[in-house]
Image (cartoon, rainbow, N blue to C red):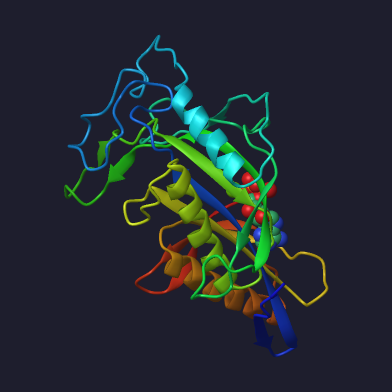
Length: 280
Ligand code: ADP
Ligand code: MG
C-alpha cells in the first residue's frame, strides 16, 4: 500500500491532514425522484416543474423506482451493503428554492450501507492498486431549485427545474490524507458512476459536486475538529480547498485559536474559503 505522506510544516512541527468527502451525484433518470417531470439539463427555466415539484397543496410524492435501482447499482459497484429496508425522512428548512419547505432525504435508514473504493495514486495508471477508501453510506435525496441574483437589479429569480431531481449522497469515511488522494478518489468515483450509468459525472454542469470535510492533527493524535466546504465542483477545486483549508487551520491552531466546526464556501477567484454558517 502506497500511503502518501502529505504534511504541513508549521512553526510547532508537522501536521497531518484528514479528509472526508460527501459527493452529491445527480441520478441519471428521465423523471424526478417523486414526480414525472423531466430532468434534462439546460431547459428553459421553470419548464420542467410538476405540481408536486412546486409543492401545490394536496400533492403526494410517488417514488421513482428507477432512481432506487440506480442507487442499488452504485452500491453493488462499490462492494457495499444494500439495505433491504430503507426509509425517507423530511429535513425541514425554509428557502426560496425549496417550495416544499423541506427536503425529502434518508437520514436514519439509507439505501446503501458501508462499502469501499480503491483509488490509484499513480497518475498514469488509474487502475493501479493504491489505497482503499471506506464508504460510510449512500442515501437518496431531492435536489433544490436555483436562485438567480444577477438577472435583475432589485429582484431575484427562481428556476425550479432542478427542484425534486434525484441525488445520491455518497459519504466517504475520513480516510484520505492528501489533496492528491482526494483528487484520485473523486476521479475514481466519477468513473464508477459513469460505468454503471447512474450519474453522468459532469462536474461543470453541477451533476456531481463535493462537500469537502477537512481537519488537521499532529501525526498520531485523535481526529481534529473539521470544517465542511460546500458544493465544490471540480477535482482541482477540491484539491485547492484542502490545501487552503488545512493551512488556514494550522495557522489558527498555532496562533493559539481553535478551529470552529462550520460550513464554508469556496471562492475560486480568490482561492480562499469563507465562513457561511456554523454547523446545525
Ligand atoms: P454531517 O452529516 O454533519 O456532514 P457526517 O458524520 O455525515 O456529518 O460526516 C460528514 C463527512 O465528514 C464524512 O465524509 C466524514 O468522513 C467526514 N469527517 C468526519 N470527521 C472528520 C474529521 N475529523 N476530519 C475530516 N473529515 C471528517
Ligand atoms: Mg454533511
